[in-house]
Image (tube, rainbow, N blue to C red; front, side, top):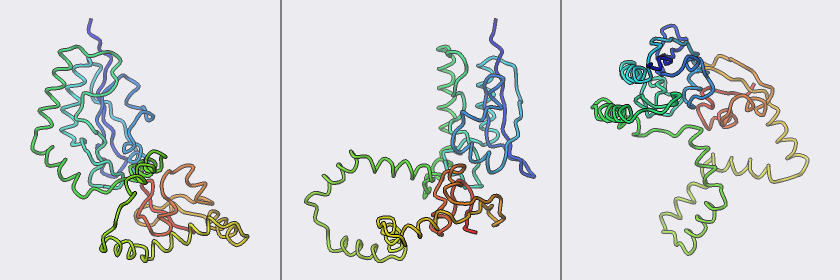
Length: 262
C-alpha cells in the first residue's frame, strides 16, 4: 500500500496584497511548524506575518516532491539572497525542492529523479540570471558578519594572522592608507568608546551605565514606533543584532528593523 501521508503547502505574508514567500512539503504538522526553519524565513515571518495554505494532499512522498518543485518555480520563491531587508526578494526557499526530512528513505529511482529535476531547474536561464544578480554587490547580513567575526576571533585564527604578518613590509601607499583610515571620524569615535570601556574610574562607569540604560524604540521603515525597551540590553534579549550600531547611525537596521534612542 502506498504511503499517502504527505502534503504540499505555501506560506503567505499578512500584507494587504499577500505574497508567497515559501513553498514546502511534509507530514500533516509540517505546514504550521515554525521551529525548524531557516533564518530568513524567521525574519520575514516576524516582519510581515505568516498565513498557512495547505494546497495539496494527502499524497505519496513522490507526488509531494513533484508538486513542491513545480510550485517553487511557479511562485518564484527560490533564492540565494540571504538578506532579511531586501523587500524585492522575500523568497525563503534556498533549494529548488525535493529536499528535507520526509519520514522515510527515498528509493534509488526517486533520488535519481530528484537529481535530474534539480539539474534541469539549475540550468534554466532565469535561475542562472537570478544567481548572478543576487551575488553581485551583495552585502553580508548581520548573521554572516557575526560568523566572520567569531571565526576571526578564535585563537587559531589570531595565531594564523600573526604568523602571516611576521616580517611583512608595508609599501608607502599601504602605510598612507592605514594612516588615513585611522583619521576617519567613525574610527576615532570607536577608539574613544573602547578607551572608556578600558578605564575603571567613576566617570567611565557612569558613562557606560547611562549608555546601557537609555530607552530604545523598535521602528518600522517609516519611523513609526512599534515597541519600546528600557535598554539595549533588554532589547537584545528579544532581537539579535547590532542595535547599538543602528542607534548611533552606523548601520541602517538590526534584526530587520530601525532603532533609535528615546
